[in-house]
Length: 220
Image 1 (cartoon, one colour):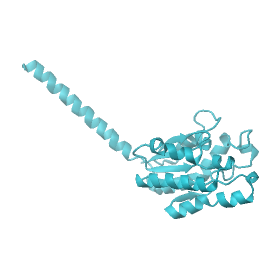
Image 2: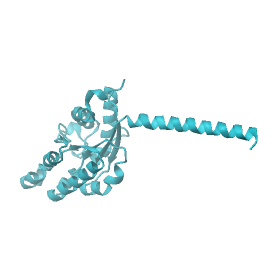
Image 3: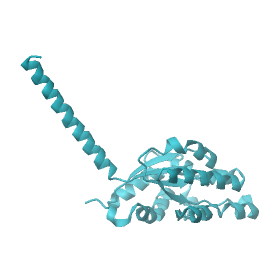
Image 4: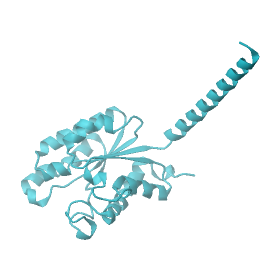
């Protein structure tokens, strides 16, 4: 190898090392930011809302405004049941995730699926996430009134029971302050509009911040 070629190789190697160090530094910096996945249904997918107006995006904006470091990833699928969430949890929640906001079960209740099935599916999702070392914030749901008292008595306790069993943070009702308010929902009376999403975000935000580690997560 002549000097000119050797010199070129050395320069190329130097550049490669510099790029490698830069990439490593970028990865290290990214790992300092908690990664949060919102695993849910249409309520998490921003059903019929403009781009950027769904729950994950508005939650990201709210955290940014508070200076709380976190990367929010939306993994909502419209129409998804707890069974659908279980079938995709392994690939919908990527490696490196620190926290999952688990928002599933609304479609189970709307379809009148057996509450025990919902309980088992959510329990399995939680166990899979905990096995991977991922924290879970469980977002509860209530059965719609038209399903009757017996169904509600079997369905509504699911979330509190699972939160206690697995020692999870629980937000008791994801649609708190929004359900049944026509001004905060789309014309279907089920899905929140932009104002409704902002109410949900404002209500759940303190718990998200606390679960992420509190105010010390603020950026410098």
